[in-house]
Every structure is written in C-alpha cells, then in structure tokens.
Image 1 (tube, one colour):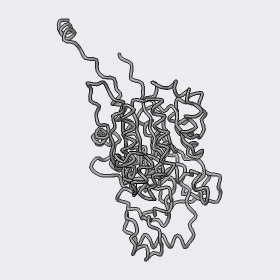
Image 2: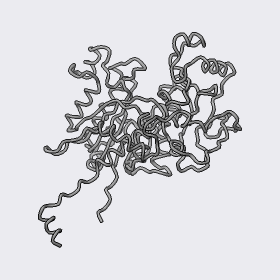
Image 3: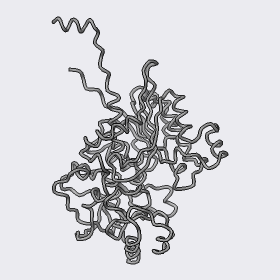
Length: 437
C-alpha cells in the first residue's frame, strides 16, 4: 500500500494570534514556524498551536519561540532560512492592512504597506509551492492620488497595490488568482469581506495551472457539508452566541487575567450541540471557554445602550438622524441582528452592541463570530488604551485582526487536495499484460 502523502508544511507570517494557522492545522496542514511582532498575540498563538494540546508546530531549533518581525527574521536567520528551501510547501500571511483599509485614510506611504516587501523577500528565499495573502477589501482599490501611488509602486500601469503585488509574484514564477470573498459564505457568522491572493508555483510548460480562487469558490458547498453546516443560508449571530447570554445567569469572579474586580456568567454548556455550535464546542464537553469577562458598564452607559437598541435597525449602523437621537457622533455603532450574520468584527469593542442585552460583546462572543472554537484560549490583557493602543495587541485586538479559522480551513482543504500526488499513468502494454493475467 502506498504511503500517505505528507501534510502541507506551512509558514505563517504576520500571524497575529493564529487564525490562519488554526484553520490550516484543522485542515490537516503542519505548521513549521510563525512570525508575529506582538508578544501578546504571539503568546496566544504559541499557547494554542506551537506548543498546544491539539496542535504543535514543527519548530526549527535555531529559531527562538518568541515575538519578532519579518525584518528581523530575514536579517538574523537568512542562512538558516536557506536550509528550509524545498521543505516548505506554503507561506501564508496577511501583511498589516491599515494602509489599505477603506475605514481609515488610505495612505500609500504608510510604512505598514512596506511590510509586504518583507513577505515577498521571504517568498523568494523559501520558494514554496503555494502562497496565500489575505487582506482587507481596500487592498485592491486605487489610492486617492496618482502621485501617492507612483511614490509607492513606481509604476503607474498598476491600478492598485494588489496589482503591484500580483505582478511581483508573477515575476517570481507564480500563477496568481485573486478576488473578494465574504467569510459568511464559508460558515463564519459574520459578513466580513476580505481580498485573497492565492498563488501556485508555475507548473511544467505544457500543464495549465488552475485558478485557485475560482476553485475555492467552487469548493464552498462541499466544505460546508463536510462541516455539518447549512449550504443555502448563512449562520446567524444567535446560532453562534446564544449560549453566552448573561440575563438569568449566576455571575462569578473572572480569573483568567491578572486584572481583578471583573465578573463573568457561570457557563451552562448546551446539552446536544448541533451545526455551528458543535464545531465551536468540539473537544470541551462541559468545560467553559475562557475570555468571557464582562465589561464594567456604568449605569449611564447601560441606559445609552438601551436607547441605541430601541433606535437602531438591527444589523445596520446608526444613521445621522439616529446618531443625533441617541446623542452620539460615533459612526460605526451597530446593534446585532440575531437572525443574520454579524457585521465585520473590529478591534474596537464598543463598535457592536449585543442584540438583546445592553452591553458590548465579550472577547469570547467576538471569537465565536470569528469562528474560533471554544478550546482556543486567548492570552494576555483584555484591552489597552492611550499611547499603548498602537503598540499592544490585547485580546479584543487579537480577535478583531484575525483571519476567521473556518475560511482558513477551506483554503487549507483546497491546497491539500491540490497537493495530492498525481496518479501514475498506466501504459497500454501494462494494461494488456494485466488483462492477460
């Protein structure tokens, strides 16, 4: 009997807390190492996936298990990276996307955009068969000024930075397919538009390389059926977080962080979880998930949330008139619609109000809406503020920045099947011999 093919070995760059790594691992791929500059986000990834109970990376002995930048990896471990060439099948990474985000000022000179260059340098060193880049929808939009675009990519023929990256990858020998995907189409209870760039090293001259993005879209129904999820409708907010309600629950002290004085509801697990809940509760039986600490809202804040819930159309941002009515200038406040997917989960906890309780969501509720299973334990502080906001990556930020693991798992399934060895053709002579035996 032929040996089973070895799993796809991957490297995760700009890894965050590990959403991509988790989904790929769930799809049967094997992590080798991950690069993330935030110590808080890296500790969550290390705890769950590098040295975790369910998954462990095949971490090189020469690489410290610590937070670092891609720039430092290339600078201090260039020779060791060369030794990995040929043993890495896949590089994934979502370079920091704030410079492309339509939610903010799209600045072509933003230094975070330059981190894509470091990703490309690593690709050139390792030359894996597959590449996956995930970014915000704005990654494929024009910058607002031609001057700014020219400064960044120095070639006005490229309509967007995504065009520039695709061109660079093609120069490195890759076939590039790309497009927008809504994570809700792959079982994530969240309307989260993301731009995917899926690449495969060019095959032999006479062999056509398939469009991986189109193949991913075509695999959607089979993926959902395999996960026990509905094909004809999207997963709703209520399906994802209804078991995490506070009303009627006993409140106990929250002990999963160093900060004291917070509470969380005593958790009662569903008796026979089905569908999406079954995926979220896998491996835990009756154990409660972590990161369920409740915010300490003032009475005025609770009254404000009640007013917002009465005024806001569920699932839609407050209009100008509605903002004036509730007394806020905040543009992105949305009350969840229990019967639809959530809007995009961000790094700001107060962007979203619960559908029936006057409060923001817990980290765990946000994680459920991102499709992180309950056994995945987030580490470090819950929030940060002031000057530290730009430097630190607490739990709410880790979740908001993550690639939904379910989408990553769909990508992993696609590439794993693409990587299966081709059947050996049987010659006519062999067939004739077999028929005569």
